Length: 275
Image 1 (cartoon, one colour):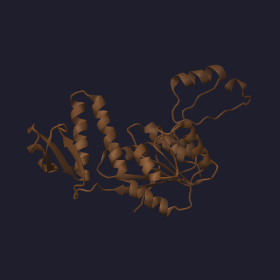
Image 2: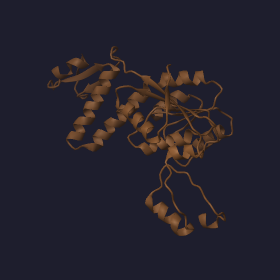
Image 3: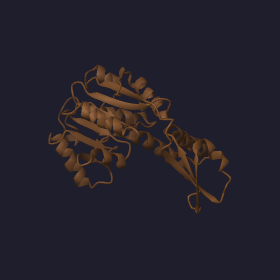
Image 4: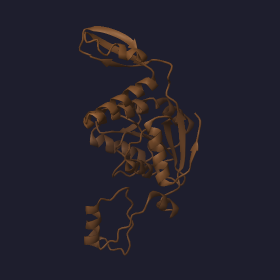
């Protein structure tokens, strides 16, 4: 395809180009490949300058409405509060239901991640990390609903934290995720790009190799430690003259540090807004 193109100059925008792809472009088209950072692309006006808005949230540490279970196969059940969990850790005959606040459940998952990393079981640590990321995202569902109401009539794309959350937030509106048939995903995307619907929900399907025609509002509920994914989400959401991108972020958590890292790398200012 590249060899058939008869232009003198080419500009390709990509969040990341691997070395083998660079070498291929140089070989077949004599391309000179330049690495352009996101902030430079914005400065050169290849991409619009986004208005980034962060909504700082605080984990509840009063209401014990969450729980986890120790020794689920035991018949006898004992229910305790999180501060008392160590009193029951050696009681082998009981199934222990630990009631906790959002902050305590976050602490529990963090303890699990650190423990399994410490003994070299990184696969289990990664599973706990994914559970922690989904948990924080699910606590933001009401924020998304308020933002959708606030921007009623605008074109909105939301990156949810899980397929379950994507389904819950979207309801009968357009949604894209990996458990949905490819044909339905294409139909949903076409409906959005053809301006038949103004809301589109997804988990990570829009990160790569998908084009969006335009949008006014982007909502990002999760960031990973991979800054490239943050670049890709931002790039997908820059589809208007002044794209507004919301990052609901819990203070004093790992996602706050991930947001700070992304902002420092792309060198963009952001506004703190209240809900």
